[in-house]
Length: 272
Image (tube, rainbow, N blue to C red; front, side, top):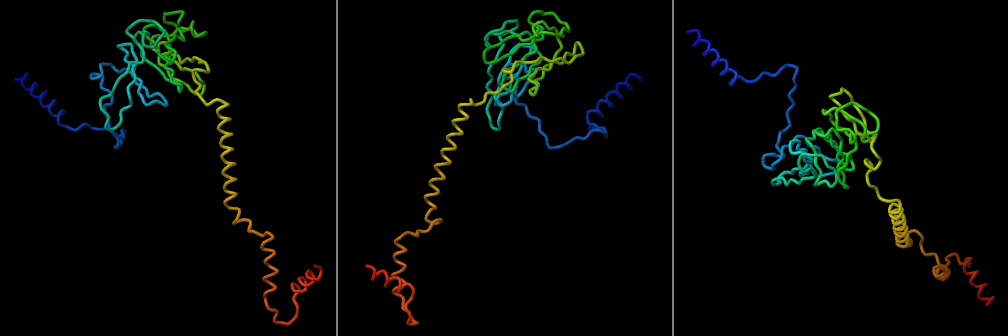
């Protein structure tokens, strides 16, 4: 009898949990207006997304498949877009080899960071190294001389760290921040200027654009000057001056006295 009562009580408790609305703590503020949407389905694409980043200035998402030791580029989904097309950026199975991006091998990477230039820095956990994926291929920038865990600083190729690290890019300092969780440290790798600098137009190109702009502004000013000249400077040439005496001579002198213009004309005729 007691066993039946306990079973009924448990069943009732489970039922009440299933139908009772969840309670929200008074310290929690639920803000409306947000939606949740799946944009990458690893089951359909055949990948296991472990981490994702949106590189600056790129329309693609960079996806890390840690279990597959590979990186993929997926177009950022837009409203009404069809199934995403995935492209393998780097990684060709477990291992450790640099070189061309397509043939390079990683071993269970767990974290990565992207610079504004588009370089990808990888925390290659299985190999205890930090790698870089760039347009020229894949290279090792830290931990290359020692594949064992540790906490040594110094030249990056001699440095050691724990397997549990996470990377972040510090653009203002042109540096890579390393959260070395296993050693309870935050560390830093100073990068090369070419790892951070963006491409800008050459000085010659900038000067050419400035000269072209100056020339166009001068031509525009000359054309505007010719068009506006009749309105700014009225015609005061000799033709109008010659017409003025004749017009004044034709005017009658109601006072009966010779005007100064008549006197001047008579003197000119006598001199002739």
